[in-house]
Image 1 (tube, rainbow, N blue to C red):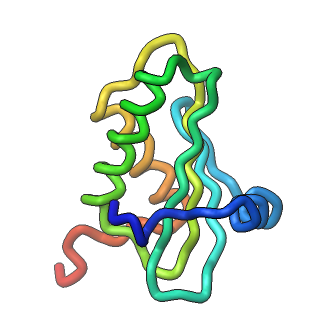
Image 2: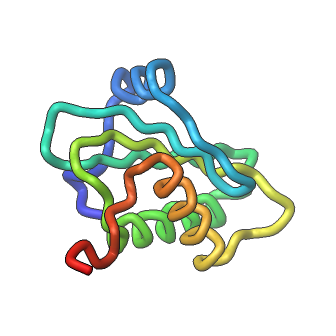
Length: 115
């Protein structure tokens, strides 16, 4: 995920938390709100309940990579919240969880639009 695709600012996070629809599964919570730009921006939230700093940073790095390679519809602000669990999720589990939420939210672009 490029730095210009990151959500910043307490005000925008608050707007998304208050005025958006949410989708959840056992690993992640996704909140999305349309924005006025042509790009989709992402914000990641990992609380201390998830684990120590090393685990939280690992999960953020994994999610940034997943977002970077995932085709997402443009014009949205998306906040991804990591839920605490008993075990550390693998890269594949995080990817499956995020793709599931993006599909349910209608934000996942088809992989082969021409077919």
